[in-house]
Length: 296
Image 1 (spheres, one colour):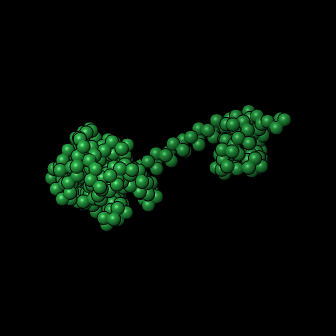
Image 2: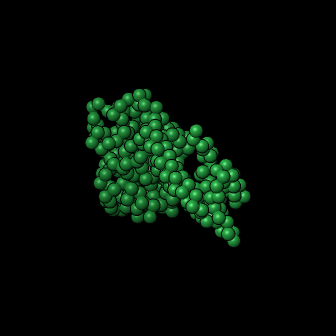
Image 3: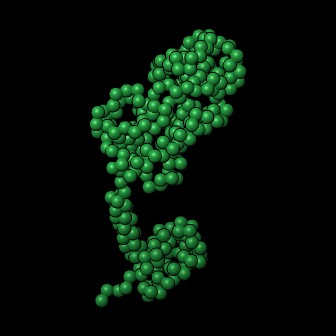
């Protein structure tokens, strides 16, 4: 009849003590007291009828039997950890890959992702930044957060999230001068080259212009506005946190620009619990942003 195996926890304690050659360091690793480690080792030695450590001047050294048992424990526990990791990986679905426009990702989505993790700890999300058309198969993307200003694949599933609102934004110190009609430099961006024309048409307002400055990306125009270099047309979603922290001001408010943010998926949202959860969360967060800006 084979000998009865010691408890797994005793072997785990022994392996740590043997690896560190120290009961104290094993106690630190396992979050136990030195006394608890010593008792576990003593009980293991009593059960086996073998001395596993030599104790000399407060130091411990493996005996020949202890060395042999440590090698067996190291291999067995290592194999057990490897197998458990494989089983967990097999049982957990891969992360959802979400593609999002870069400026929206940086200035709105990323600061809110901890809230998604807290609300849905079982949903792993991998974020990619990209804009415009998306090929789900080629790009290996599960969801795409976009503004509906382009043509998407005919077989994509689309869910509207929130209407887009835009307005001129500037450094807070410049806000009064904007409302009193002082000319300012207009900041433009290649990625939204018609933003000023759209805002003027939608708002019915005309602002005096002291000059034009065109930057490559939308987020650069917002950074420039915050640095006091002029007025930029900002999306309420992309400036909401800066407005709340008084790093930017929107002296003339925001108007709907006729576009909207949408979530695209290659499969129906209600066919996948995780996709449905992300959709509901995005809608809630965008509605909260609009409400915070007085637009909800």
